[in-house]
Each structure stands twice: as C-alpha cells, then as structure tokens.
Image (cartoon, rainbow, N blue to C red; front, side, top):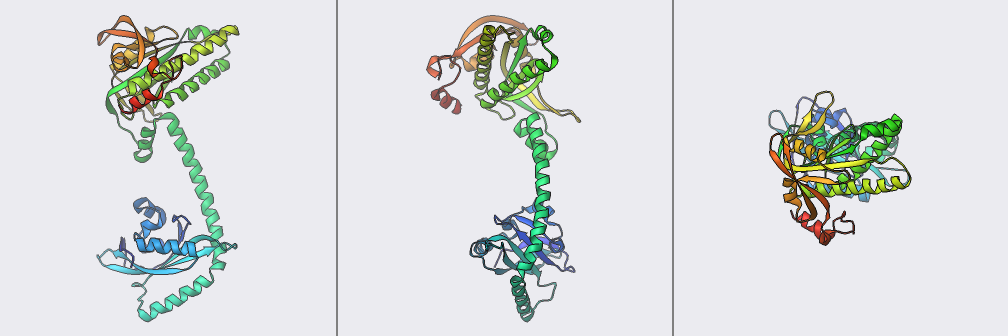
Length: 400
C-alpha cells in the first residue's frame, strides 16, 4: 500500500486523472482531472511539492513499481489515498501503464487515477473498473498517437520557455555574482550585506585620454573590451568578482559575495597576473612600434558593504573606506606594478616578495603604508616569473 498523500480536494467532485510520466520519473503532463482531484493543476502542484513521480506517490513500493513497469514493460496498479477538506481520506486506484514506441521500447508511463470513493466503488465495481482498465491498456497503441502529438506540443513549449529562461539567467550572471543572481531569481530582490574582510582592487590605464585621441572610437572600444575580457578570465580563475568598469577603470574584489579568508592573496595573485599579461603585451607592442597601454593596479583589504542598488537598472556595488583606499593605492602606484596597502601586505607577506614604498595620506584613515608586490616568493612559485602559484601554495590557501 502506498503512503497516504495529504492533498486537499473537495469531496463532491470526481475525476479521472491521466498523467504522463517521462522515462526518468518527471511528471510531464496531466489532464484537467488532475486539478479536480488535487485542487490545483500540475504546474502549481510541482511548485508546491515537486514534479517527480516520487513527489506524487512518496512510497518506496510505488517507486519500485514504476521501475518495474519501465524496465519490464508491464502494467501495475496500487491503492493510495488523498486527504479531503473535512480531514477524511479518499481512496485512489492508480494504474501504471507503459506506452511504447513502434520499436517496442518504453517511451513513457501513463498513470491513470480513479477516485474510488467519489464514484461509489464497491468490491464488484472495482473489479469491473479493473477490467475496463485492462481493456484501456490493450488499446493504448491508438492513444499513443495522440499522446505523441501532445508531447511534441508540450516539448515545443518547454523548449521555448527554457530558451527564454536561459537567456534571462545568462543576462543575470553577466551582471551579478552567482549568489546575488540566485537571490534575485528566487526572491526578486537581494539585500545589502556587511563583510568584515574583503579585498578591493582598481586597475586603470595611464594616459587613456591621450590614447583615445589616436584611435577611432570603434577601435578604442574593441581594444579596451579585449583587455577587460582577459581580466575577466584571470579574476574568475581566482574566485574573484568583477564589480564594474568605469571608462578605462576596472574594479574587482575578493571575499564577496561568499566570504573567505584567502581573498587578499587571491586578489593579489590576479593583480600580478594581469600586470604580467599587460607588460608582456606591451613588450611586443614596442617591438612592433604600436602604442602601449600602461596599467596601474592598487589593492586594499578591509570591511565593505555590498548589495544591489537601483530599481530599473539594477547594479551590484560595494561601499566603504576600503574602496576609497584601494582607489588611492591605484592612483599612487606605478605603471606595470601592483601597489598594495600595509593592511593587505600584512595578509600576503608570507607568500610574496614586496618592497616598502613609504606612506600616503588618506582622508579618513590618516597615513597608510604602501608596498609594491614584485612576485610570488620562489618557494611558492610554479614559474620563474613568480606569477603562478605552485601546489604547495595552493594547498596552503585551501586550508585558510
């Protein structure tokens, strides 16, 4: 006997429910009788309880029957119950019938539900219905043609919906971090959050205004886009988030929206990799007598507030003194170098070779120490440039 299903129905209603079930147990279609029996259509039921056969009949015995029907191409039946508004239960007689392709393989299963109480079944009448169901199973080949057409229509609609959903999800993920996009999709909003430890980096091209005067607008945008696309690849590899681009400035951060303790090191790893990429590219451009794009990067670690702002044009952003100091680190840096604050240096000094540069005055925090990051320390580097971490360093980071 299957477990009781406690879904409210109105006892004065009666229904013959037909449900088509995919080979993997997905409830793909139901007639109007399904709504009459359970008080809601299949789509609503799926949103409330799930849309697998195990959600409809939560019983190991029924799951075993389903597998047997599917694998052995045989019919089966069982008795279950659904709850009524007055607290009583109404018995359902359910038939599982395999629907076959012309090749003889099971294309799907059909669950046929009969409300025994509402139809006033007795033992003799139940046997009569069993016989009728057996007759129905013998004629299912004719019904298969209709079901195939219905399935095709359903699949076309599902494909259209899935394509639109994929487009929407892709847009969300291009604009927002995964966790934020997930919140927006499920709740329609995403609140602000305070992070005690985050690392913010600014990358900015020196002399961009001068460069822009020597290039056509289309060429300028294409080159800038190619650089930013490469930066995207590098920060993604280190589990960082791009916050935004403002003109020729590229802002990214670590430790958000998912907190972690390794974000100062992760951010600096991405920063030196970006600088190495730009320096190598500029070396080739000098040989080809092409204009070079000189990049400065500044990094600072501290608390931030992050969240989604706006109503019509949503944007994920971060705020706080940490952001301002990271910007000052970039402005006070040198091209081709990564300039970090003393706070960031305190987190990364065991893994990187750095040079002390002195102090810089900030508006809210007074004088702040600065360091140039030269490379990963040799004992932790996988290459002679000191750009890529070796296995030992990665293992240490994973334990933070």
